[in-house]
Length: 235
Image (cartoon, rainbow, N blue to C red; front, side, top):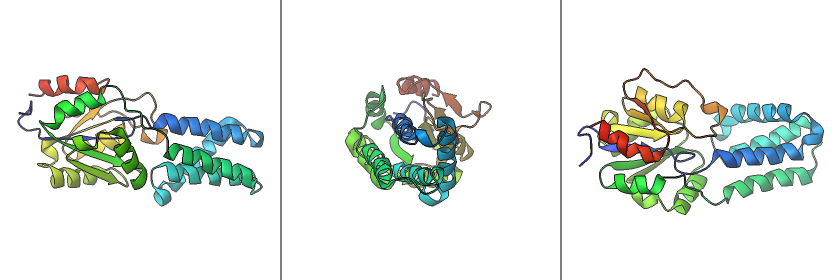
Protein backbone atom coordinates (compact mmCIF):
# COMPACT_ATOMS: atom_id res chain seq x y z
CA UNK A 1 0.00 0.00 0.00
CA UNK A 2 1.18 3.60 -0.60
CA UNK A 3 2.98 5.13 2.34
CA UNK A 4 0.43 7.94 2.40
CA UNK A 5 -3.29 7.07 2.07
CA UNK A 6 -4.00 10.27 0.14
CA UNK A 7 -1.16 9.96 -2.36
CA UNK A 8 -1.98 7.61 -5.23
CA UNK A 9 -0.03 8.95 -8.22
CA UNK A 10 3.43 10.37 -8.88
CA UNK A 11 4.40 12.31 -11.98
CA UNK A 12 8.01 12.43 -13.14
CA UNK A 13 9.72 14.87 -15.42
CA UNK A 14 12.08 13.23 -17.94
CA UNK A 15 14.96 15.47 -19.08
CA UNK A 16 17.55 15.94 -16.31
CA UNK A 17 15.29 14.15 -13.85
CA UNK A 18 15.40 10.63 -15.28
CA UNK A 19 18.18 11.06 -17.83
CA UNK A 20 20.87 13.53 -18.85
CA UNK A 21 19.80 16.26 -21.27
CA UNK A 22 21.08 19.78 -20.63
CA UNK A 23 24.73 18.74 -20.80
CA UNK A 24 24.28 17.83 -24.47
CA UNK A 25 22.83 21.28 -25.18
CA UNK A 26 25.83 22.86 -23.46
CA UNK A 27 28.31 20.76 -25.43
CA UNK A 28 26.55 21.57 -28.70
CA UNK A 29 26.50 25.25 -27.80
CA UNK A 30 30.28 25.15 -27.31
CA UNK A 31 30.60 23.49 -30.71
CA UNK A 32 28.49 26.30 -32.18
CA UNK A 33 30.60 28.98 -30.49
CA UNK A 34 33.77 27.40 -31.86
CA UNK A 35 32.27 27.41 -35.34
CA UNK A 36 31.41 31.13 -35.18
CA UNK A 37 34.39 32.30 -33.10
CA UNK A 38 35.74 34.54 -35.85
CA UNK A 39 32.44 36.40 -36.08
CA UNK A 40 32.28 37.80 -32.55
CA UNK A 41 32.89 37.47 -28.85
CA UNK A 42 31.86 34.06 -27.49
CA UNK A 43 29.82 35.57 -24.66
CA UNK A 44 27.94 37.80 -27.08
CA UNK A 45 27.28 34.91 -29.46
CA UNK A 46 25.97 32.79 -26.57
CA UNK A 47 23.72 35.66 -25.47
CA UNK A 48 22.28 36.08 -28.94
CA UNK A 49 21.66 32.35 -29.28
CA UNK A 50 19.84 32.37 -25.94
CA UNK A 51 17.73 35.32 -27.09
CA UNK A 52 16.85 33.48 -30.30
CA UNK A 53 15.83 30.40 -28.34
CA UNK A 54 13.54 32.37 -26.06
CA UNK A 55 12.09 34.30 -29.00
CA UNK A 56 11.37 31.10 -30.90
CA UNK A 57 9.79 29.09 -28.10
CA UNK A 58 6.30 30.18 -29.07
CA UNK A 59 6.97 29.08 -32.66
CA UNK A 60 9.07 25.92 -32.34
CA UNK A 61 8.39 24.86 -28.76
CA UNK A 62 10.91 23.12 -26.52
CA UNK A 63 13.39 20.64 -27.91
CA UNK A 64 16.40 19.95 -30.10
CA UNK A 65 14.78 20.90 -33.40
CA UNK A 66 13.90 24.38 -32.14
CA UNK A 67 17.40 24.73 -30.68
CA UNK A 68 18.94 23.77 -34.03
CA UNK A 69 16.81 26.27 -35.93
CA UNK A 70 17.78 28.95 -33.40
CA UNK A 71 21.46 28.18 -34.02
CA UNK A 72 20.93 28.54 -37.77
CA UNK A 73 19.07 31.82 -37.27
CA UNK A 74 21.79 33.18 -34.97
CA UNK A 75 24.54 32.21 -37.43
CA UNK A 76 22.75 34.03 -40.25
CA UNK A 77 22.21 37.15 -38.11
CA UNK A 78 25.81 37.26 -36.85
CA UNK A 79 27.25 37.10 -40.37
CA UNK A 80 24.65 39.37 -42.01
CA UNK A 81 23.59 36.44 -44.15
CA UNK A 82 27.10 35.57 -45.30
CA UNK A 83 27.46 32.34 -43.35
CA UNK A 84 28.72 29.67 -45.80
CA UNK A 85 26.58 26.66 -46.57
CA UNK A 86 29.28 24.41 -45.13
CA UNK A 87 28.86 26.06 -41.73
CA UNK A 88 25.08 25.68 -41.88
CA UNK A 89 25.63 22.04 -42.71
CA UNK A 90 27.80 21.66 -39.61
CA UNK A 91 25.14 23.29 -37.43
CA UNK A 92 22.54 20.87 -38.77
CA UNK A 93 24.92 17.97 -38.18
CA UNK A 94 25.33 19.08 -34.55
CA UNK A 95 21.55 19.03 -34.14
CA UNK A 96 21.30 15.55 -35.68
CA UNK A 97 24.02 14.31 -33.35
CA UNK A 98 21.90 15.41 -30.39
CA UNK A 99 18.89 13.59 -31.78
CA UNK A 100 20.71 10.26 -31.90
CA UNK A 101 22.80 10.57 -28.75
CA UNK A 102 22.55 7.57 -26.41
CA UNK A 103 20.32 8.00 -23.38
CA UNK A 104 22.17 8.20 -20.04
CA UNK A 105 19.87 7.58 -17.08
CA UNK A 106 20.71 9.35 -13.85
CA UNK A 107 21.68 7.58 -10.60
CA UNK A 108 18.95 5.86 -8.55
CA UNK A 109 16.35 6.21 -11.31
CA UNK A 110 15.57 2.63 -12.25
CA UNK A 111 15.57 1.17 -8.75
CA UNK A 112 13.38 4.01 -7.47
CA UNK A 113 10.82 3.65 -10.26
CA UNK A 114 10.77 -0.13 -9.87
CA UNK A 115 10.00 0.16 -6.16
CA UNK A 116 7.28 2.75 -6.73
CA UNK A 117 5.56 1.26 -9.78
CA UNK A 118 3.64 -1.33 -7.79
CA UNK A 119 2.48 1.16 -5.16
CA UNK A 120 1.55 4.27 -7.14
CA UNK A 121 0.37 5.16 -10.59
CA UNK A 122 3.50 6.57 -12.21
CA UNK A 123 3.04 9.16 -14.95
CA UNK A 124 5.80 10.51 -17.17
CA UNK A 125 5.09 14.20 -17.81
CA UNK A 126 7.58 15.83 -20.14
CA UNK A 127 7.66 18.67 -22.61
CA UNK A 128 9.58 18.78 -25.86
CA UNK A 129 9.55 17.27 -29.31
CA UNK A 130 7.22 14.26 -29.54
CA UNK A 131 9.51 12.03 -31.62
CA UNK A 132 12.62 12.83 -29.60
CA UNK A 133 10.96 12.25 -26.23
CA UNK A 134 9.44 8.99 -27.44
CA UNK A 135 12.88 7.90 -28.69
CA UNK A 136 14.55 8.69 -25.37
CA UNK A 137 11.88 6.90 -23.37
CA UNK A 138 12.20 3.79 -25.53
CA UNK A 139 16.01 3.87 -25.33
CA UNK A 140 15.92 4.33 -21.55
CA UNK A 141 14.11 1.03 -21.02
CA UNK A 142 11.91 2.72 -18.40
CA UNK A 143 8.67 2.86 -20.38
CA UNK A 144 7.11 -0.26 -18.88
CA UNK A 145 7.31 1.26 -15.40
CA UNK A 146 4.88 4.08 -16.24
CA UNK A 147 1.12 3.79 -16.20
CA UNK A 148 0.79 6.76 -18.56
CA UNK A 149 2.98 9.05 -20.65
CA UNK A 150 2.12 12.68 -21.42
CA UNK A 151 4.36 14.67 -23.80
CA UNK A 152 3.14 18.26 -23.67
CA UNK A 153 4.04 21.56 -25.33
CA UNK A 154 4.37 23.35 -21.99
CA UNK A 155 3.71 22.81 -18.29
CA UNK A 156 1.43 24.99 -16.20
CA UNK A 157 -1.15 24.48 -13.46
CA UNK A 158 -3.84 23.60 -16.01
CA UNK A 159 -1.56 20.92 -17.47
CA UNK A 160 -1.21 19.17 -14.12
CA UNK A 161 -4.90 19.59 -13.32
CA UNK A 162 -5.78 17.88 -16.61
CA UNK A 163 -3.21 15.07 -16.40
CA UNK A 164 -3.73 14.17 -12.75
CA UNK A 165 -7.50 14.20 -13.26
CA UNK A 166 -7.27 12.02 -16.38
CA UNK A 167 -4.80 9.44 -15.09
CA UNK A 168 -5.13 9.63 -11.31
CA UNK A 169 -7.41 10.76 -8.49
CA UNK A 170 -6.86 14.47 -9.08
CA UNK A 171 -4.03 16.86 -8.19
CA UNK A 172 -4.63 16.72 -4.43
CA UNK A 173 -3.79 13.01 -4.44
CA UNK A 174 -0.78 13.40 -6.73
CA UNK A 175 2.86 14.43 -6.61
CA UNK A 176 5.16 15.87 -9.29
CA UNK A 177 8.90 15.18 -9.20
CA UNK A 178 11.37 17.11 -11.33
CA UNK A 179 14.46 19.28 -11.68
CA UNK A 180 12.74 22.44 -12.92
CA UNK A 181 11.13 24.71 -10.35
CA UNK A 182 9.45 26.71 -13.12
CA UNK A 183 7.98 23.80 -15.08
CA UNK A 184 7.72 20.88 -12.67
CA UNK A 185 7.29 22.21 -9.16
CA UNK A 186 5.62 25.61 -8.98
CA UNK A 187 2.73 24.87 -11.39
CA UNK A 188 2.12 21.43 -9.84
CA UNK A 189 1.80 23.01 -6.41
CA UNK A 190 -0.47 25.70 -7.86
CA UNK A 191 -2.67 22.88 -9.16
CA UNK A 192 -2.89 21.44 -5.64
CA UNK A 193 -0.29 18.67 -5.89
CA UNK A 194 2.86 17.92 -3.98
CA UNK A 195 6.01 19.19 -5.69
CA UNK A 196 9.35 17.48 -5.07
CA UNK A 197 12.35 19.32 -6.43
CA UNK A 198 15.39 17.26 -7.44
CA UNK A 199 18.15 19.73 -8.42
CA UNK A 200 20.41 19.03 -11.38
CA UNK A 201 23.84 20.56 -11.83
CA UNK A 202 22.79 21.99 -15.19
CA UNK A 203 19.43 23.66 -15.70
CA UNK A 204 18.55 25.98 -18.58
CA UNK A 205 18.30 29.61 -17.47
CA UNK A 206 14.73 29.76 -18.79
CA UNK A 207 13.72 27.34 -16.03
CA UNK A 208 15.08 29.39 -13.11
CA UNK A 209 12.58 30.76 -10.57
CA UNK A 210 12.62 31.02 -6.79
CA UNK A 211 11.80 27.89 -4.83
CA UNK A 212 8.32 28.01 -3.19
CA UNK A 213 9.83 27.28 0.21
CA UNK A 214 6.75 28.49 2.09
CA UNK A 215 4.38 26.18 0.24
CA UNK A 216 3.22 23.34 2.56
CA UNK A 217 3.48 20.80 -0.25
CA UNK A 218 6.98 21.71 -1.41
CA UNK A 219 9.84 19.33 -0.73
CA UNK A 220 13.42 19.01 -1.98
CA UNK A 221 15.67 15.95 -2.17
CA UNK A 222 19.29 15.79 -3.41
CA UNK A 223 18.64 12.84 -5.74
CA UNK A 224 15.92 10.34 -6.60
CA UNK A 225 17.36 7.81 -4.18
CA UNK A 226 15.92 9.97 -1.38
CA UNK A 227 12.38 9.94 -2.74
CA UNK A 228 11.26 6.76 -0.97
CA UNK A 229 12.46 7.93 2.46
CA UNK A 230 10.62 11.19 1.84
CA UNK A 231 7.40 9.36 0.99
CA UNK A 232 7.63 7.38 4.22
CA UNK A 233 7.79 10.65 6.15
CA UNK A 234 4.60 11.89 4.52
CA UNK A 235 2.66 8.96 5.98
